[in-house]
Length: 198
Image 1 (cartoon, rainbow, N blue to C red):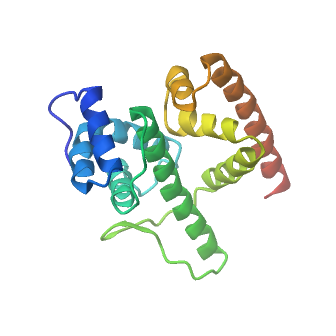
Image 2 (image 1 turned 135 degrees about the vertical axis):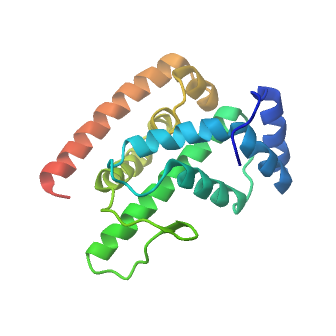
């Protein structure tokens, strides 16, 4: 799964996404090398938010996301942006699941350490901030699904305002407004959690 030698065309990526959506598993294997650099960039954004001594590496996060995608029921993708948004959600789930597992262990739970690749076991403190953000995002999404989607696409997926607008079928002005309101709401929610010791 190395980086591609050439820049793939948007059409090529769309065709492979369509083929995978229609149940052709080999299409995902062809797709991943074409989008590998973008997936590494996305994983790097996630890892930049983690502690500097985090034992999980960017490559391991990309590989685990690939394994989860390969083992899941194919989704019908309407755009390249939607595919990257799903990848961002998968990566976020991996990190949140790991952080929750570590928190359960600290409380004396029986959760096993999360293994991202054979022989790679994470051994650092849980990503408490990521878990708090995930919890807050779930609340926001329940209250206003579109604002939750805007955060998923912009913050976790790294999509531009225009890409997010296209994916959600709304205007860029709507995305900008939702993004501003969602960030303000999340800041208040996370500050309250921090102050309450939650």
